[in-house]
Length: 367
Ligand SMILES: O=C(O)CCC(=O)C(=O)O
Image (tube, rainbow, N blue to C red):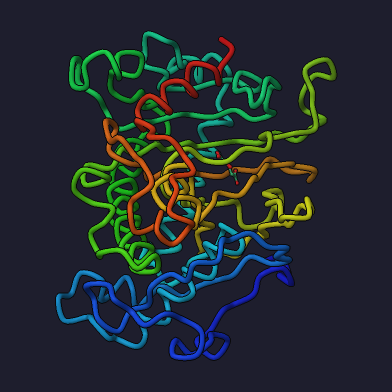
């Protein structure tokens, strides 16, 4: 395990008393805070670590209102979303052996001969699902030094009319490792539920109803899974090499949960001064960050943070990123109560999530 000075565990003793620093809560769940009106963004030097077990255990319980443990988690989520846009979670209920196994099968797949990996090659015909070689993913026009398998919520033909046409289809699963498909399907189902719960906590942190990110916004949340391998630089031919595993970007949806390699420090998050802060591995945690749709919905109260991956280590790095998004056809716009807290004017135009995604996917790959 890597020593971890950049990770600050938050505890309730670090939190201001709601009666001193927060507006009393007018949300439907009494005893929970309403987000304060100051806009996020800071020169954070560390990414907070939050033990979300009270949230995971109680958020679906109708009798949870006023629960102190849950209230603390909600406050910590609020602080983290305002200040860093990133946070680690532990106490999330996904077992560490499962997290490790998911990374292990990913690593085993990437160790296969190229011809084997290309059996599930991503193409426009596959709905942009499947395997992409090092350099095929581009961020802001530059090839990323990673290989990946991209999986998306399956889309039946015609499901969203023309909107989803380029991404229609089912996922391409490799034959080897043989448990890949079953393992990943189970993992996706667990992460969907965990993400729903964290989004309930984020809804409360904003002072919104518990189910604000359900129904027409994310009741049928679209999900994306990227299994990513970052080769050692020396293993990439000189003429193809850049120094960036994944270029600086924000994520498209609501919430991302990254299951990262336990030993390699490579994910970097930019603070307001432009410094890159490491999201060092903390075994057993997910690194979470908020995405573009949450920024639009909250009228910028919570904003996504630029991040990138640079694998300078002499070892191959693996990460598995799960993206929890709005409904594919959701038209996301700043909600009224967030507009009121931020000067009364919508800062962002309405975005149909699926259009945003398709536009990104069509420009993200060179094949
Ligand atoms: O590999 C990682 O740690 C993060 C990957 C990432 O930022 C992404 O796929 O959007």
